[in-house]
Length: 282
Ligand code: AMP
Ligand code: MN
Ligand code: MN
Ligand code: MN
Image (cartoon, rainbow, N blue to C red; front, side, top):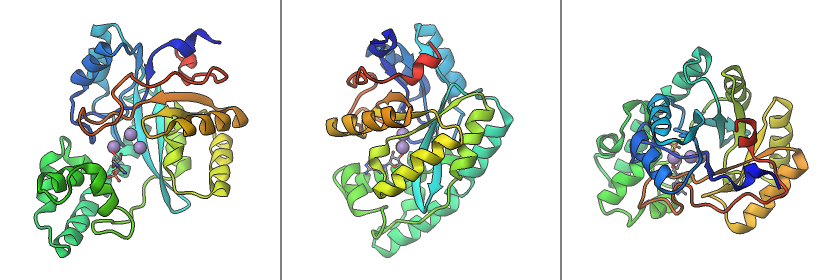
């Protein structure tokens, strides 16, 4: 077993720069307190927190990898691609992400119009109030507003009854293409990783197509141990990584102490037959 496997790596989480509730500095401290050795902040479609995270991690003696989680539309579905070890000042990825973020404001207004028709007024302003970054208003911020209003008891209930397909507040959106997202990550010197594959509502054939195409265009890794997977899925996606020759990643997808099931750095280790993606960096 590679020594890398026993390192506590957490390569997926969110700050106030996207839809998390802690600052990059607070996350660094939490990672440190929880024994994280290698950490990446992976805000959605945004690199604005990278410098702060890097500085805070260095002060605490944690190895830091620059990160991002890019929203992608693939075969009509939203999937997420994590980029790790990127140059966070690279103009190509900065510009690509800026364009990816662009439609969020308009989408948010359309979401609020639907919620108004469903009897919930003030959702745009309400969600914006929760957004730490006005350019990154997301469904998570709407979910927090709906909980605050007493419409749902927690964000999990929101994502069952609102903001998802065929429910009030769902607005379909075109994100970046898979090819663009992977190209931006590669051009910025990073590696591309498929985030939480267990969450996508794709057929088995479509998933196969995703793995093959991702590999063809230079995708390197896949999340195996994530806060979004059940223990059964750890095995399922461990086998997928092995089958396709992907490096494996591990990340909590931590957003908030109360909302998130899994705290930073508190996940099981990767299965020992896999090669961790962080072996490229450590
Ligand atoms: P958006 O990028 O605006 O579509 O928002 C996506 C975000 O919503 C994800 O990154 C999660 O933080 C959150 N989200 C989506 N689905 C769920 C869910 N079922 N439970 C909790 N959070 C969710
Ligand atoms: Mn999120
Ligand atoms: Mn995600
Ligand atoms: Mn995430």
